Amino acid sequence: MGKFERQISEGVTKYYWYPGEKVDWIRGALTVLGGGLLFFLIYVVTKNSLLAAVVSGTAVQAVVGAYLGRRDAAGLSEFHDPATERREAVVDGTRAAWRGTLQGLLCAGSAMLVLNMPHSGFLADWVLPFVPSIIGALAHSGGMLWERLAQEVSTADMEAAAEADAEEPTKELEAA
Image (tube, rainbow, N blue to C red; front, side, top):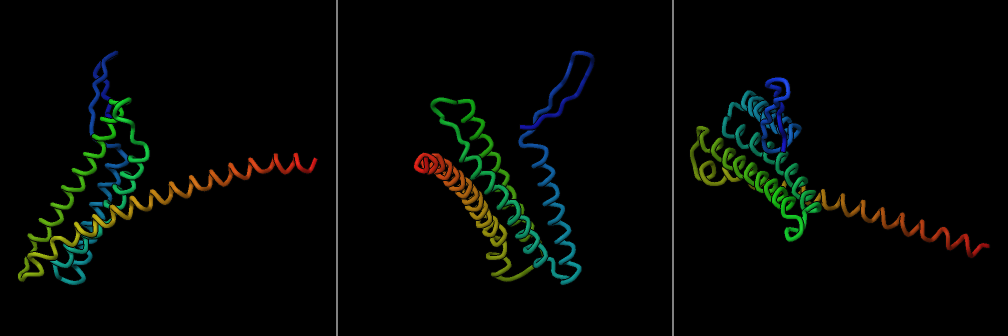
């Protein structure tokens, strides 16, 4: 949860709370701006707004899906026990709900963008609007897998280091 602090007078500070962190909002804005730039570039090159909408929507969904997948996996590794730490469990659940809402809104926005481009035909009406969302969902799963593999590697490295440290005193005692 982020906050803005505004000094109203001496001894009086007003706080404005917003969901997420400032860095996440900046990354999100840069991703959407990058998608808009990609749309413009593809439209200039191909003169096909439907193709530009599908490709830019897919690119934005892939980046956001991978990022949110990594955040979800990291959140799952830090999830608190709801029975003992209720407040922390509510915070964890709220963050996960916010990420899910954000991804759902982005999927709906991508589909609306594709559907509102001038087009005709079954493919443009029924298949292409789903492409960005499907890629976003696959990227979300890939991001979760990437984060889990990173966590597994760090755990395996720590166990190997612990075993090596445990073996060194034994070898020194045997040599003596």
